[in-house]
Structures are given as C-alpha cells and as structure tokens.
Length: 322
Ligand code: 13P
Ligand code: SF4
Image (cartoon, rainbow, N blue to C red; front, side, top):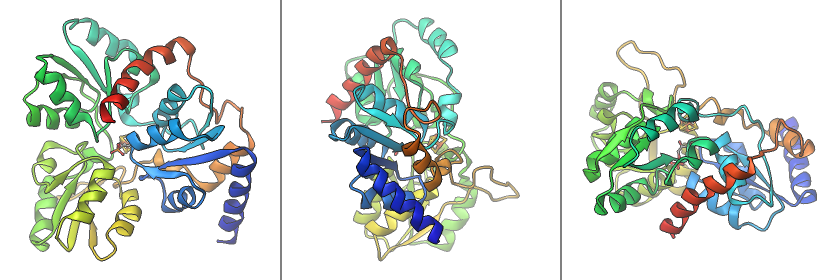
C-alpha cells in the first residue's frame, strides 16, 4: 500500500511537470479512476473521453484505456502528445476487424454507408463514413435510416443486431464481438433474476441478444450509471465490465449492485467480466509512460494521411452528438 502511495505521489508530480492530464475509462481499475478524478482528469465512456481529451488545454494526454481510445485522442488532437500506459492494450473488436478484409467487405457493397464502432483501428475509421460509440449509435443509425441509407456495420455483431432490431435499418454486419460482454449468459441471468425479483437488469449492448432482451435499461457505460441513479429499484443486476461498479456505486450509494453471470450450466468464463486489456492500466505503467514520454512503447503516432481521413467520420459523430 505504501508502494502504491509512492506511485500516486510520483504520478501527480509528473502530471504537473509535463502539463499532462489523465483520461480514464470506467473499466480501468478503481484506483486509476480515482487518480484521474483527483488530478483533474476525467473518468467516462468512450465518447466523453474523446471530447474531454480534445477540449482540454493540457499539452499531454495520458489515456488509461485501450489503444483505439489513444488513437482517437491523437486523431482529434494531433498537436498534443498522447501517451498510454501500454500500447499492448488492444480490444477483441479492433483485432477482429483488420483493415484489408474490412475494406474488401466495404468495396463489395459500394452503395452502402459505412458505420464503424469507435472500437476500431485508425485505418478502419479512415475507411468509414461514420464513427459511432455505444452512447450515440442508435440515434446515428436512426438518422441514416430515415434518409433511406443502407448500412455496413462493423465490427460488433451484438451491438449491430440490437440497433438493427430497434431501428429496422438495413444493416450488413461484420461478425466481431467483445470477449467480455459476449460471455454474459441469459439462462444463468434468468435464474439470478428469480432470486432477486425486484432487481432491474442493466445491460451494455455489446452483450448477446438473449441478454439484451432481459434488460430494463440498455446503454453505454455512462447511460448505465445514469440508469442506476434514476430507476427506483433498490437492486441492480449489471451486465458489463465490473470496472463500472466503482463509479456506479458512487453515483447510487444506497443501491445494491450485483454482477450478471458469465458462467452457469457448467460454463467457465475467460474474461470473467473484466477486460484483460483494460486491466493493463496499472499505476506502474502510468508512471512509466510519463517518465518515458516519446518512447515507442507509450506514445501514440497516427500516420498523417490516415489521420486526415479518420478525422472526417469522427468529427461527424462529435458534431451530431452536440
Ligand atoms: P462505452 O464506454 O462507450 O460504453 O464503451 C464500452 C467499451 O467497450 C469500451 O471498451
Ligand atoms: Fe474491447 Fe470489450 Fe475490452 Fe471494451 S471491454 S476494450 S470492447 S474487449
């Protein structure tokens, strides 16, 4: 514990020296989220992280999350130094959507509008007409559908089918998934609900359709925290990465929060409701990033021509979300 205190003190000092600000996602460990708050940074969902980083006057952003979040920050703020605790923190959606095959998929359907989730590489964003995050995806697809557009959607098939069901939009799906949310199990959730009949179920839409169907509220991490604050229930069963419990409990201190099941019926979990890549954002790695700024292990670089193209669909999203 005293070792942790020492890390925190050094990080605070380094943030000041380097005119840097810490931007963290709700899925990072509680101590990282607390540190971001304490030091004037932010803890939020992926849309808010992008906006906060872009609008903050700091010279350096240190992004505690996964690589696509760092890349998005760099695309939006090329003049800033963007550091990450580790560039190995990827995302199964990003890995499962390589640019060559995704681009060929788009080329095969030239009459479709390409909408990609923020959880993708800069190259995939550069191939897209729109970027969306889970908090704004539904509204953007509704908007495109109302204009009669046919859509290519990638890479999250669960989020895509949820949106297709809600909007009735014509959507061709890439078959990617988040290894964390894909593991939530409907049958075990049904059993848990029977134990807590008054609980409301909060579900992130990267979860399978059978789980989303049982939800009282579906939304991005920020939207789920809001739901825990505003719904009357005393108990919530929460189907998203367990990192969210830190903020959700702060926002709804008198409520009981229960993890949705990732196993059941003999199944064992791989991620057990915590993203292995988000978990890489430890205190030691944050300190290393601040000490070794400029090193290829920590600094995000996005090729200039790629950046210019990826900025277009990102700006479209941010303008739409205003
Ligand atoms: P949001 O915070 O935008 O809901 O994104 C969830 C996510 O998958 C981040 O990895
Ligand atoms: Fe990707 Fe899922 Fe991890 Fe988010 S939680 S970074 S979507 S693997």
